[in-house]
Length: 144
Image (cartoon, rainbow, N blue to C red; front, side, top):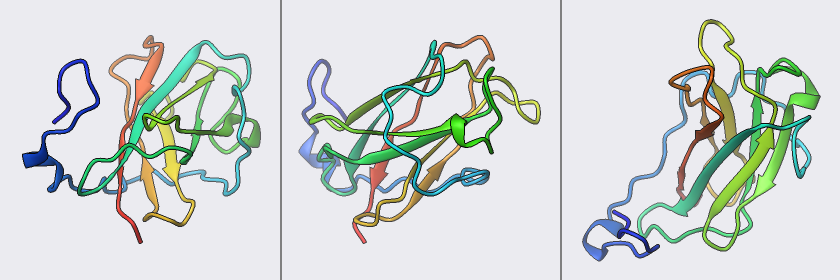
């Protein structure tokens, strides 16, 4: 789908780029309106990803992505465990936060797009190991 080393999309596949569906459990402990922050807590762990438009795959700049998790510094429901970031011109985002720790047996994060121009999407990616220092989640958004 993405050409090696570039952000170019294959025209044959770009028109059929399907939107991301919300994941079961993705909205657990969601707090609307989390502020845009430079970092959540003391940091040391990185949540990363990209955001593009369904259909043509155009990277979306300035998209607000909210992130929260159960970490070494707080629970998912704690407001201090929530923050938001904006995508750059390539549709990429990154937010540093405290180390994610297992909740209900799984180390996982929560991410949301909920700003209204596109359909709301909640993601709940699971880490392969609680020792991982990053987690990636990509969004393909469908205009409303």
